[in-house]
Length: 260
Ligand SMILES: Nc1ncnc2c1ncn2[C@@H]1O[C@H](COP(=O)(O)OP(=O)(O)OP(=O)(O)O)[C@@H](O)[C@H]1O
Image (cartoon, rainbow, N blue to C red; front, side):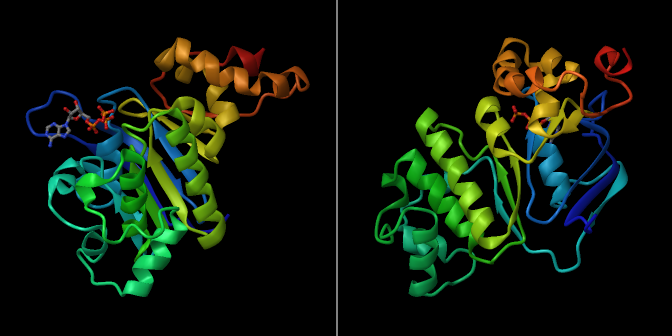
């Protein structure tokens, strides 16, 4: 296996005053060119995981290893403050690092919003704004893109289009992508690997494996049924083979489908 771009080993994060750690013994990594999505209920520690990987949150124990000189493009979850500022797209792209007109034009073209330079940030649609954020994150030619709920506030076609764009960008640039998302169905189609988080790593694997995992179905209930249906056709033709999935020590379930 190639060396991971970023790797968390047995990472625990506790916030001062809280009884339980937000993240408990989390180990996970991202390989070059991989699209990895973290799913989990509200408050399950998804944003904390991302920020810990980026070195923005102190670890209680464990460690994070980053490839030397790793370039990361990060789109944080809370960007509505930036959005309210009176500022053109062109100026926004030059924060914090100045870029040339040609670079700005090229990156807007790549993210599917060419020619928006002179528009006010506040006047963009939700989908256009997400693409401008993605454009800015791509400017330093990252090896890893980190997107925390990038499709928040988009409608269904907007969500699908955004994930398609992410796949195109990966194809074109070879960037690896770590995303946090609530869009289970779309995520399952667009990710190479899914990590299901609930304070610890509940289960992880290909979308096909995770969608069939009992931990995932316990966490997401009816919604999980929909993602499982995506893969049922495949299962129908492959009864004897159920892929292994990794699961945490405290998930409290049995793998009947495997041991039986
Ligand atoms: N700086 C902090 N101090 C204390 N508690 C915090 C801090 N940051 C996050 N938390 C708590 O840690 C838990 C996990 O938060 P986090 O934002 O990582 O979850 P999340 O899975 O991203 O949630 P959501 O889906 O709602 O965005 C929550 O209970 C939150 O209140």
